[in-house]
Length: 120
Image: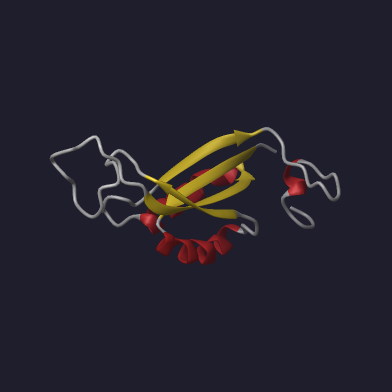
């Protein structure tokens, strides 16, 4: 079974609603960490600045990272895009990459077995 890593960069206020909603996708494991960053707007908040400067403002964001079967990624992406959308600058970014393997150190299980408990 192929695995993919999904990294979602979003505002702090969106983390709890996302976490609760992930139950629909049987996602039980994720890593969340705080970061500072900006996108193409260089950290502009709430409005588009027509006078772009070279100054970059780093804004607080959260990154949610999870690994799941590749076949489930499309549905998850559609859901997350709808959940995060406000139409304003800063809605976030989603990155998807291939995972060649996952290993549960305690048991030595690999692949999907390293990510779930019991039968998949």
